Amino acid sequence: MDFNGRSGEMSVFTTVAQEGSLSAAARALGLTPSAVSRIIARTEQRLGTRLLLRTTRALTFTAEGEAFLRGARRILADMDEVEEAIADQGVPRGRLRVSAALGHGRLAIVPLVAAFSARYPNIVVDLTLGDEVVDILGGQADVAIRFGHLPDSPLTARRIGDTGQVVVASPDYLQRHGIPQEPEDLLQHNCLRFNFRRAEPNWPFIRDGKEFSLKVSGNIECSSGEALSQFARVGAGIARIGEFSVNEDLQRGDLIALLEAWNPGDREPIHAVFVGGAAMPARVRLFVDFLLEHHRI
Image 1 (tube, rainbow, N blue to C red):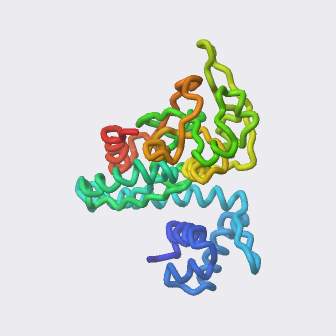
Image 2: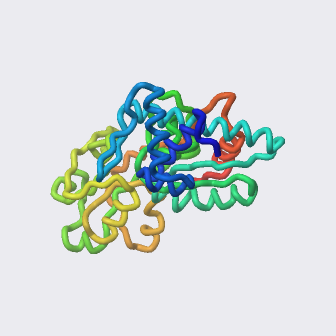
Image 3: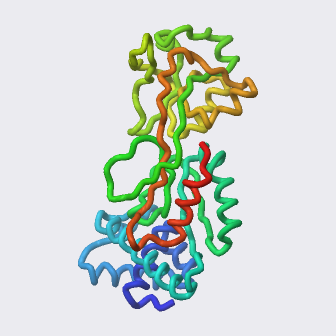
C-alpha cells in the first residue's frame, strides 16, 4: 500500500490507534517504526496541529487526534465499501463489526451470528462482547445492541425486543440473611447494582396499583449484567436484573425470584443501533433485518 497519500496517512494513524504503539503499528504495516513516526509527523505538519502525545511509557491522543481518528475510520470504511460494491456486483460481503453486551451477546447474539454467517458466508462478522458503550459514529462498530431508553443522537435505532426485570438471590444468601417479605426489607440487605450512568439508582415496585421506587444500597456495583448474576449466584447479595440472563438459574434453583407480587412489570427495550441513511452498507441492513426477524429475547 502507498502510505504517501492522505488515505495512506489515515491508514497508518488508525493502525497506530488499534495497535497502541508506533512499533506495533510498524510490524502490522510492514514498515519501520521510524517510517511510521515520519508519516505521523508529516500528517501533523500538514494539519498544523499535534495529534499524538508520545512518551517512553504511553501514547495518547489530543482532542484533535481523537477527531481525526473518528473521521479517518469512517472515511476508510466508506472507501472499502465503495470498492467492495464495485467488485462484488451486488454480492454482500465485507467486514461487519458488531458490539453486544456480555450476557445478552452470549445467550442471544452468538447463535444469531452463527445463523447469519451461514446464510451470508461472504460477510465476515467481527463480534465484540463487552458492556462498554462503543462509538459507532467514530467507527468502532457498525451495529451495537443496546439496552434501555436511548439518548437523542444522529444514529438510527431499531427495536429488536425487550426484557423484564426480576429481583433474585441465591438460596445460600437467603439462608444466611433471611428472605425479604416486602420491598422495604431490601433496605436491610446487600443489593447488587449497575454502575453505569444510564442505570436507574432506585429499584421500582408496585403496591395497590401504585408504582414507587426504593433506594437500595450495597457494597458491589458492576457494569455487567452477567457479572451481577454471577455475584448473586455465589451469594454476594440481591440483584435486580434482566429475566433473560437468569432464566436458566431460576429453572435450576441456583437463584430464587423475590418480591414478585410487587414486580411492576416494567420492560427494558433492546435496540440495534447503527448509522442509517442511503449510504448504509448492505451488510448492515441485512444484519439488522436478520435481528428483527430472528431475535427472540
